Image (spheres, rainbow, N blue to C red):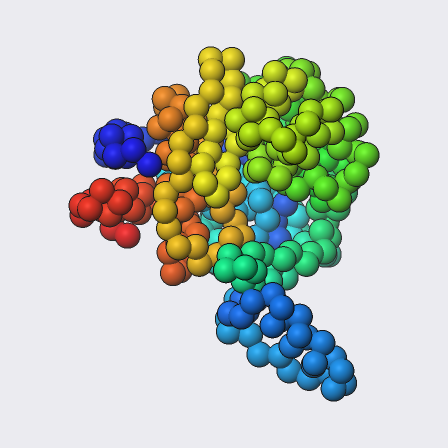
Length: 357
């Protein structure tokens, strides 16, 4: 990361910042994090040995229950930075209790959450493989499995119309995801004032439905910004006939922008890039030692949306998103970054003492 870019970003963060209103839907998960300090082979061997002796305890080094889901996580990250999120999701009584007390979201930010009889849940198993920390998500989509336009009430639609950004996330686990995208983003384009942001999550389990999604939204004008990670970018470009196996990620991002018509904001562990009508830019990630992998993309998306709203220079926006994601994955408490946190993080990177870590 170039020092002058970090310096410029610090100057931005030291100035008064706006407070964008952002609608995010449709997923909130109750996440059970399980961290295994050994490597994957040791975990597999330990599970097999436990099963072969007829069952029993398998101690893990650390476990925790927390808020999860792409929409809920990104909403919490936006709120922490000073934005005004409006989360549209479903939860059971326990999930709502967790949201109200442990998510950092409150009041109007939770007005779009509906109480139902089931809860989306995930066991996030974090384990080392070849020296890298990887996460294995074992989930039950619950009410996210079929979240469609009929699940939105008048309050949700009014929020969609007035919001600065409207985000539909986690299409991959929502069988009604394509319908939700077309309806909600259609409302924004017909009656709203803001921009639309899509992050589908890993589309691999949806098979041929990926082609249907691409056919129905490609160059539709419905999607202003499409956020994705490396695996998603390769999957989508391959589904559109591009030889992604032999291509660089910058080439893939360029192809996706040209074919889909949306700005493509691509994030990886090494760098992030943006591809749009005015050109393309790439910015290196910050060198940190990750303590977690789950949720990094949600933190990145939140800061990326914030940067788009502020109309930051593309490189500054990417640096802001990289900093937010790096802070989240490397701090002990698993906290999303406030503006002061980001200043402290960037100052420490430059060897100074700005803000707080």
